[in-house]
Every structure is written in structure tokens, then in C-alpha cells.
Length: 473
Image (cartoon, rainbow, N blue to C red):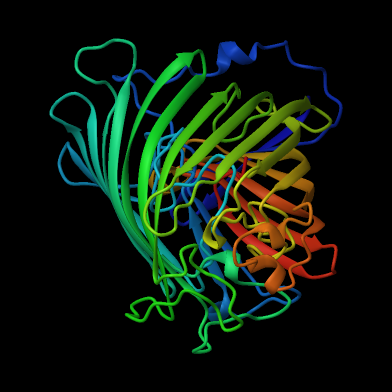
């Protein structure tokens, strides 16, 4: 391996840079994935959580001015010792991002299932924060208040998490939460045909609820969570509007009951098997998420649908281009969702398209189906290592930053199931239901997660540019 090292002097410090120079270097010694993968966190360890995702999209086919950009924060955040925060003494901290430990069987403020559904579609910049009281009771419990605010989204989530019940040493823990969320859901947006409310406004989804979950490790790198969650769902013509709607301007159902509000009680089970060799920039190993949701009939809606989900990613080391400490990887991902029996309400349809689905499309633009399958083939290769000098850069980026590039191909289909959802939100908006996208991007590791700048091209010729903090896999 041949590399060039240099030092870049900046006003606030120096950075040592190593740049890859050769391809097809000698293979490094084989390394066991399990030997380098951290095991499931014990109660006295710091729990690893998946990275916060911040996405800024431009309008399809053009570079929109700043005031028209869309920002979307998702919940995947790796909680590291270098994570920027404001500490109020030893037991309190204020942290950017929502940061939810995985796996989670709770619903609420951006607590998404293993396979994503019901993705918010806020417009304009949004700001996620969480205030945490750490080690409550002296046994590692955490009390968290998460907040999300933006032009078309507002949410609060209060949760309590105990990683170990009593003195049991089997790792059994529990968590409870209460939440409220008001937003424009991608399910009802970004179609070829606009379908609004009778007032001419976009449907604004309002959810209130709470839940309880129990979780524990069941094997190396494997953890399972079981939860029971209640939600009250309604639709308004604005974020703070008091008027409620049960259907859109064409008479398509928004609520399953036909009333102004639905009750949804669900049993949720999710499992995570994480055998990657790194949490931020994995180059080998695999990650499997599986979910089972069962609606329990309550209230006038009496929803009783069943949902199954699977999300699998496999990382293959490919050292055509590598750095001394980091190699490249070929990434294969497949995920799918199935609702086999009763039809789900409109607000529980999947949202295909976007930076976490098929890149090149806007969030939810590709479809709002009942069933789907989605695949990704992506090659990532590093080309430089940046070692920041000075406290300012280290606080923001960490001790070492790997710069990389990626080339990707995404594809998904809803199996023509958009019209098999109550209210037909995808079919009514003439969403295509299937498609593919491809593109290129630049990547950078940091203490707050993987930073991605990606340019996607849809099969329709439309384009999107996304800035993302956090990996999609």
C-alpha cells in the first residue's frame, strides 16, 4: 500500500491527511467479524444506538433555493462518547438528534419499525433535540424528552428506559413513553396528482399515544423487544387546526372508522442481529432487522391488520481501493413489508421513494403500498483519512475522519398494492408504484455518524440531492 501524508494548516488547527494512491493492494490479514463486533450492551455499558439522519432534499429535477429545501430528521443515531452535547452537571445533557436505542418496539416520535412506514414529510428546516436525565435512581435508567419542530412538523416524546429490571442479570429491561406528533405524512404527498382536503390544504396527520416495551439480549449480537402501543390518529387542515377530516376532497377515506378520530392498539415485536465490524463505516459483516406488528381491534376503527417486515444488509470487503486502516465494501441490502390479511388504514401504508428508499425520488413519491420489496447495490471506497488537529475540529469530527465515495443502484416495487390500502392514498395520487434510481455520493465518518452527500437520478429522469447524517442501512 502506497499513501501520501500531508498536513493542512487551518485557522483553528491542523489536520493530517492520508490519501490512497494505489489499487489492488495486498489483502490484510483475515479478521473475524464476531471478534471485532461489540456484543449487545449490558446494563452497565453505554448502549449503542443507530445514527441520526438529517436529509435536505431539493425539488426533483432542479437545485431549489435554500428557502424551498426540505429537511427530514430520522432517528437512527450512534450515541458515542464524542457526541456533541451540552452537559448540565454529571447527570443531565442536551443532545442534537432524537437518538433511540435499537431495537425498539415503541411507537411515537420517529420511533420507526424495522421496515419503514408512515414517514413524515416536513418542509423546510426542522430541529430535533433531546434532553436526558442520566443514571436516574443510580441504576443506569434514562429519562428523555425528545422534541422535533419545523414549519410542518411538531412533536414531543417523553420516555423512561431501565436497562435492567431489579437485580436480574439476564439483561431484561423495559421502557415506557408518551408522545404527540403533528406532521404532513409522505403517504399523502408527492404524487402525480394532488389530492387535498375539501379546504384545499394538505392532510395533516395528528397522533397522540404511548406504550410500554420489554427488551433483552437472546444471543451474541442479538436483541429482541416486545411492546404494546396505543395511538389516537386524526387529520386536520393545519398543524394547529381544530377542524377534523375523515376523508379527502374526492371522498377517499383518511380514517378507518369514518369518524374524525381512529384508535389504534398494536402489539409490536422487533429483533436486531448486528454482526457488523464497525457501527459508523462497516466494511464486512451483516445486519438483520425483523418486525411483527398485530393491530388489536379497539374503538370504532376496529383495525386488526397484521404486518411483517424484514431488512437485511450484507457487507462484502472489496479492496480495489483502500487506506491503511479502512478498506472498501460492496453493500447488498434487501427489505420488504407484507400485510397479508386485513387491509391497513391509509396512515399505515408504506412510503416508497426518498433518501432512505429509492434515491432520485422524493419521500413517498414512488408509492404508498400495502406490500413492497426493495433492494440496493452500493459500492463504497475510501480515498483519504483526515486526522483533525486542535480541539475545535476534534470536538466536531472526532479523532479520525475517513472520506469515501459511493456508487449506488436502488429499486423497489409495491406489487400493484397501492389500491389495496383503505382510502387508496397511493392510487388516488397516481403514484407509479415501482421504479429505480441510481447515483453517486461523497461520504465522511464523524463522531455523530456517517455524513452523506448523494445525487440520485430516478428512472423518470428527475433528480434529487440529499445531505444526510446517518447511514440508511
